[in-house]
Length: 328
Image (cartoon, rainbow, N blue to C red; front, side, top):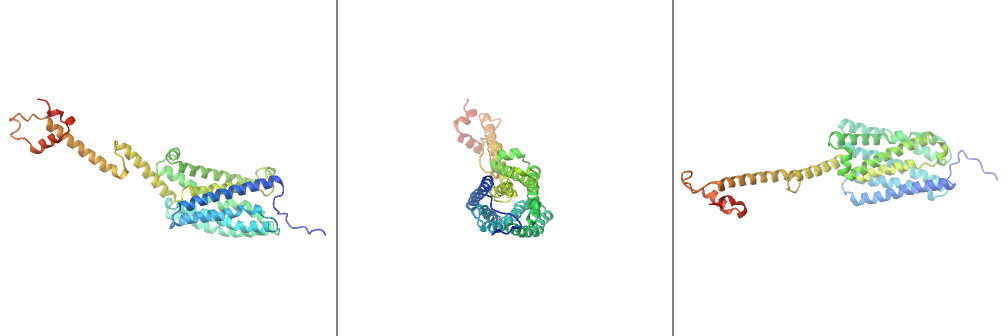
C-alpha cells in the first residue's frame, strides 16, 4: 500500500554529513551550557535575582540540544517542545542584558528597552506555533517566520554591547586594550561579545540564503547555536551588572595607583591619604629635630635656658640620626 504523500518532508537528518554537523553543534551547545551552569551555580549569591535568571537561561537553553537522540515520531514533537524553552531562554537573555545594562542607562532608556522586549513576545508565540505546524508536516509558515528571528531577538543585545563599550571609554577612562590588560575577565567578555555578533551575522546570511545553499545540508544550521553559546558566556563570565563590575575594577585600579604614589605605603586606597598625612607629620618632626641638633647649646648669648622638650627629643634619637650633636 502506497503511503499518502505528506505536505512536507521534515525528518531527522539521515545522511552522514547532516547527522555529524547537527550532532556536533548540539553537543557543543549542551556541553558548554552545562559547564557554564555549574560555574554559575557555584558562584551565584542566593538572594540575587540576576544570578537565578542566568541559571534558568542556561538550563532552558540546553534542553533543545538533545533532540538528535530521538527518532520519529518522537523526534518531531520533542524538537518543537524543547524549542519553546529555547525561545524563552532567548527572551530571558534580553531581560538579563537589561538588568546588567540598567545602571548604565537613563530611566527613559531603561523603560524603553524593557518595554520593547515585552512588545515583541507575540512574534515568539507565532514562531512557536509555526514550529509545531512545520515539524508536524502541516504548514510551511515556519519557513517564512524563521528569517525574522534575529530581528526580534538580537537588536537589544547589539545595543547592550554598544552601550557597554561607550561607557567604558567615556565614563571610566579605560582604553579597551588597557581594560583587557588590567582585567583578563573583561577581555574574555568583550571577545565573547564580538564572536556572538559574528555568528549572528552568519546565521542571518544562512537563513536568508545569501550564503550558497549547498554549503550546508538542508535544514542544518549550527551558527545560531554558536552565537547562543557566546551570548551565555557573557552572562556567566561576569554574573553581576556591568556597572558594579566596572566600579570594582576602577577601585582596584585606584588602589594600585595609590599604592605606588604612596612611596612604599601599602594597603587599600582609602588608607593612602591617611598614610601620606602621617608621613608628612613624620617629616616635619624630623625637620624640627634637625634644627634642634644643629644649635650650639653652649652659647649663653643665644639662649638663656635649654628647651627641655627639644633636648629630650634630641636624646631619644638613634645614634645614626644624632650626628649633628656629636661633634665638639
